[in-house]
Image 1 (cartoon, helix red, strand yellow):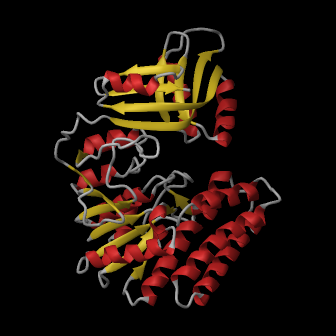
Image 2 (cartoon, rainbow, N blue to C red):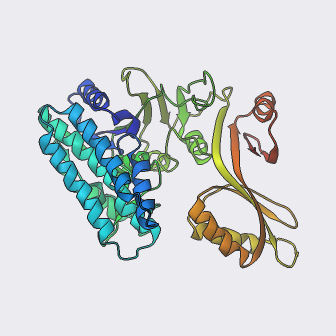
Image 3 (cartoon, rainbow, N blue to C red):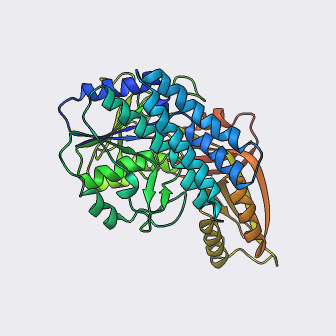
Length: 415
């Protein structure tokens, strides 16, 4: 079994869906499981629907129409006879409206997952309908029935035993399967999501449980690059990464692969390929068990929209291990990830991704026991295998709030 993951950018328009089919033809004769994200920026659009509904804004119907029109236009451009698929689309859009009407006071994260998950359902159903139109035999799978998680909505934690038992029940009567990334399901049938950009993780979960030959993530870049090409000119490409190096890079925020993707593949020694969507014959980048050797090519990772919080005790006593433990417990309770931390005698400083809703709740919880100061609208720059000149160039004319250097990694919080 080969596992192929296609992101939203790969299938954002009719030509992208047709190109997906060309890639499958390139691998004709193999058993393939296709994992697909929501099309284009659908997840962002559905997030707007969630916010408009949850906060009772007047633009809810307009936000829903954005989602409907985008998919209707794509369907009209893809199918010779779009009417049956447009009818299916309207049914799903009405399901979204019904879920909103039947809202019974769930917490935001739970409500979010029930609505945002429609993006992946729509994308995989539309592509499955296209497979039917062109005569491509396949089976559509609902990943919520296979990837079993707890009820940590928006960050579902995988129940590996239950997931493996479910995935092993997939029959072998088809050479081609299509399913959703990003989605899981609880034991009582509620939809969960695995974290933003979690479709890569979904692919590695299926691959691990199916003992797949390999996983390929098809991207709009030639492989894993040393920096984001939208921020830096002419970044280098890695031909090969070790599992360990890939884990480090994704942990620090490299967005080409989801952070949780690598470990299930490492445990089963399954290679991961990151290849260009428009040039499937190119080598791309392979992540496997061989040592990483391209240490002369620094990896630069930029995380925007960061908040830096300095936390001190209310009575101005030293910040002890017990205090730090309490701080981390509070951060974990709000499902936030610490991207950098630093402590002194009188304060403990953490850098987090800024989420307006979660931050307000976090701030309230912290202020019950601590005094806090914070700065928003910051950037966290991480450089793996850094060189002093690289670091100087990156921070030139920037205000530095925190700087940390270790053997292989440099991190700076800047504005």
